Length: 352
Ligand SMILES: NC(=O)c1ccc[n+]([C@@H]2O[C@H](COP(=O)([O-])OP(=O)(O)OC[C@H]3O[C@@H](n4cnc5c(N)ncnc54)[C@H](O)[C@@H]3O)[C@@H](O)[C@H]2O)c1
Ligand SMILES: [Zn+2]
Image 1: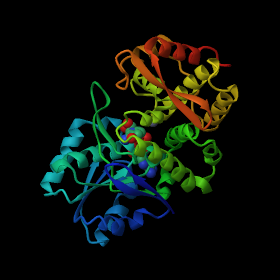
Image 2: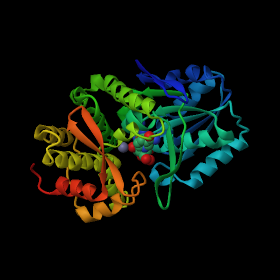
Image 3: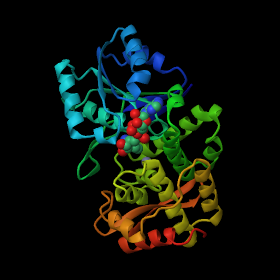
Image 4: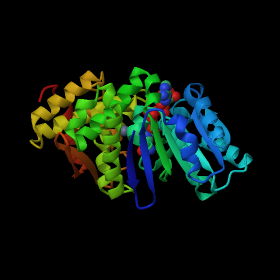
């Protein structure tokens, strides 16, 4: 087992990564001094791991309730959030009780938001069961639901008290969900540590790979918990990815969109002389090995139109995350016109 300690200005907590951690969740959660716990999970994860978690929490002497909602991004909405909050009130939860998020990023974001809102904040434990939630969404404290007007428009910064990542749960993930998470792993490799790429397909290195990604996210989040600067680095590939997702009406999975987004910004960086062509070559190769896409059918104009509606953009500029080499990216605040140029350079021609 590996432990990454996260020390943000608002909270310090451990992220434990290893095998058999669901079975140990009971006594580890008891150490948070709570009495009642609400296990929040979705309709795919509940039949796989719900009972195991309920049993071990009960065996540890905790009072346990369960809230299950239909799997999928569509459930990350105000209706599910309110239903969960009402359920907690019906069970007489107090601020010292805990929400346990068992599932992927959808469960984690929704349960995290509920934990931050109920009585202005209760305890929160993340039990991530997708590769994406293991390396990304369960750590760092961003919570959210979607509005009809857009994704993640309502949310809070609220760090968990404990994250237990049981890598045994990843064995039941469909291949497409593994690829989704691998796109984020590749993102971390490009941000800080090229050697992570060597671990991508090594089952024996899964624990190590997740721990190294979490440590990178930890370092960035601890330096900038509320995304006023450095934390934007985690958006490598994401600005253009969000446009691709939006253009597809969210039918293209996030990981696939991020894969293409990383290719576009890296190809543009190569053409602008900001990074070496070998960087793009490696990126295309690793994405291909993970069966992730490397190009998009949308036009630069269609994508740029949605870049303009990016919630992270300022009035007349946008911050792009530009690769300089594998393991080093930098923030570049550019005018909207320059952002359009980046996009066009990234899309024109498959070669460099
Ligand atoms: N808070 C953050 O910092 C942050 C970061 C990145 C993404 N996100 C959010 O995370 C969400 C995406 O997360 P995700 O990719 O984990 O999606 P998800 O939670 O929808 O999970 C993907 C699918 O896998 C299923 N599943 C989960 N665990 C499983 C398992 N062990 N075995 C079999 N099936 C399993 C789920 O039921 C779902 O159908 C998005 O809503 C995104 O906005 C948040
Ligand atoms: Zn992402």
